[in-house]
Image 1 (cartoon, rainbow, N blue to C red):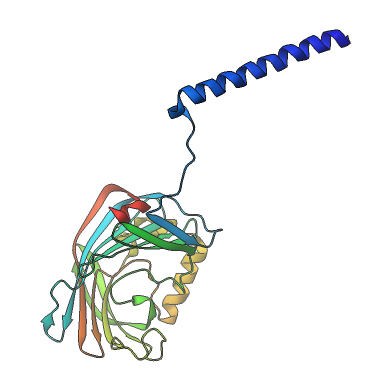
Image 2 (image 1 turned 60 degrees about the vertical axis):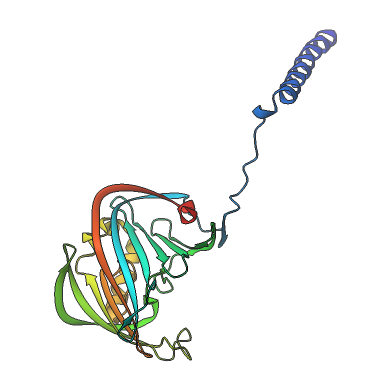
Length: 269
């Protein structure tokens, strides 16, 4: 029995050694067949909360194209303002904002994913981008958008309504908190903001209904308190600052039922 086991062990180890030699020979003869270690993209660095999960790409089927213009008094600022695209999904509770500054060519992308409860903010310029991912919280969420709408203090319905790019909207007026640390001692302390918001969020964000229940409850509480949950972006907004500067954002057109795959690396293209 011992002799038989020894012979069997010799055969097995001999085969393993021959197989290892063959693999080594192939590796030396054909280095192109070696498995390459995947390296992170050096042009896109993402930090933040490691526990938060994000996808490398998202699919949307609603695209809202917008432009913003900047004014100093009554004079339009040449090359001022931004080009904006807001993407929404009808199959997932997710949206994306892509903003490009005309003056600096800098790009700002925001991804909100309510299913994964994640948000990602990216900034890119000159072919390099970086950003941070964090847990999505509507109270702290301030997506990149003209006028920094995240700290408007109170939105009040004016009663005015109009149709913008085929979507029924209603007007709100808002003021910022003068003591907000982000505007104290700056020339851009807001005085008044006129905001046109879709009356039915599903009209531009069909996936709104797929949002987890606790987010819907939080949105309702925020609305009752008079604040604005930045989930569906305004289709039109006029901001007038304390120093007389103005920013006007308007929608040019809306494309529905056209699938778009958006990847995080698009910010460098």
